[in-house]
Image (cartoon, rainbow, N blue to C red; front, side, top):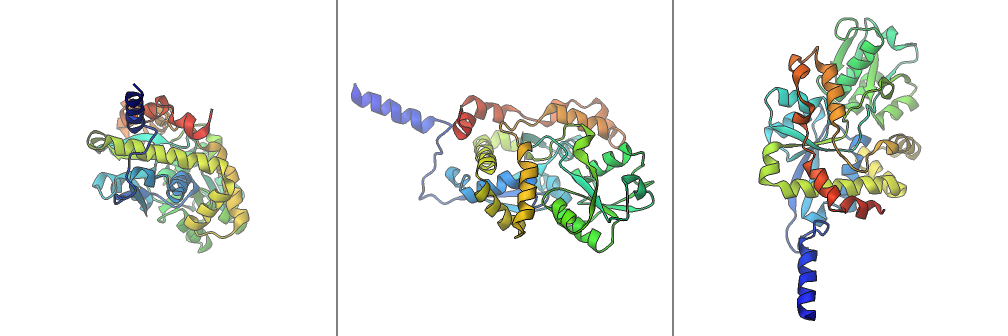
Length: 331
């Protein structure tokens, strides 16, 4: 009887979703991930990588900076995952015929700020001027258009919007006076602030939900390699937990990936964004709805689109039901 009890216990352990099933002797599988920028919005990915969370599942994760073309990299098949896609980029791609879906999200707010030279006193002073964004059609572009409309300005008419290639590149464009203002995320927003550029507008005040740290995959991948997608999300959850509870390790990781050695600046960025990371990373259908409503003028199909069409909640539901999140965070 004792022998059978031990056998049953071992079998249960091996089949448990909480236990990584990977031999240390087996080669790691290379997983390529597209990210729009090396931003704190991607911090759970960087922390999970450096903490070894992906290696538990036999993955060696490598990220590729793709700017505003992150969703295109996923659609084109050059990467298996896209981290940092949004409730703007994924629905736009799907409405255009792409086979993509959001399976997780670690922040549901518009964590962007617009900065300018000190002589520009308010966002309304941008009339006739140029605002820099990472890329046309991306999250910073979306946030910029919302902020301009909120302040009575018409994008592309009253204010020109120029894609400059990325968030750090937007700071460089400000410094080179190629643009008069730029929309940024941490840590670049704090880099600009320290360099003397004033904050014109904080997009969190717009009061809409927005998927800003979403994980996108191709729908076909959920059929052919669902377990890999699930394990990838589990590793990200571990990264998010470490990010929120181990400040010293997190700051070392951010220093490495952002290549910013100014600890005070990184600490400001870390303190700003940490409260916004979600413990249970469901991609919000409300955020999709808010974004679709704002996109109607640009994409007419958005008016009748069902928010549920762009998300698959089943991966996070399975992980939550398994008790994994409680195990990682503690009850």
